[in-house]
Structures are given as C-alpha cells and as structure tokens.
Amino acid sequence: MTITVAAVYEGGGVLKLERPIDLKENAKVNVIIEAEAEAEAPAEDDDPTGWKAARQLIGSITEELAVSDASVNHDRYIYRRDR
Image (cartoon, rainbow, N blue to C red):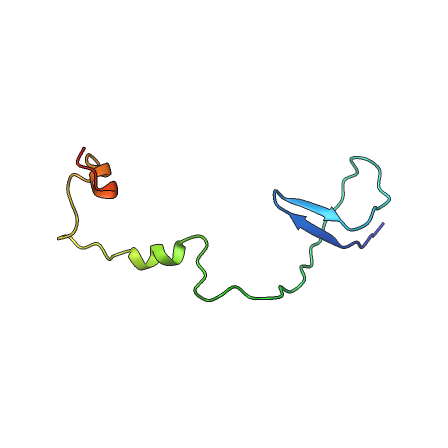
C-alpha cells in the first residue's frame, strides 16, 4: 500500500502528518522524504555552529603567543583572573 501525505518536521525527529492516515497502531512503514525548497537561503556570513570562525583561528596562534602553563592557569588566561 502506498500513501502520500504532507508532513512537517518538528525538533527531536518527529514528522507531524498534516492529515490522519489509515494505519494500524505500531505498523512498520518505509519513509521517503522529498523536502520542499527553502524560501530563503541563509546569509553567506551566517555561522551558527562556529566552524567558520574556528577554521580561521587554526594556525593563528604562533609560538611567541603560546604559553607553556595554559592547562594549569586556564582561568587566568581565559577569564583574566589572577587566581
């Protein structure tokens, strides 16, 4: 049996069907997803995960900027705390 029904994806991996369908409780199904085109593409400078910024930092810390006690004095360097 083939049923075609529109659905909306909701956070947490749930597809909410736009209309009821005739299936028995706990019926196993195969799902083929054909997503509609998004209305607007994200901005080119959009970096929600921070990976673009992280890639720019890679290799930017030179030896003269590195410190040998960073693991011991983490708070001092990150939060500018003396203790």
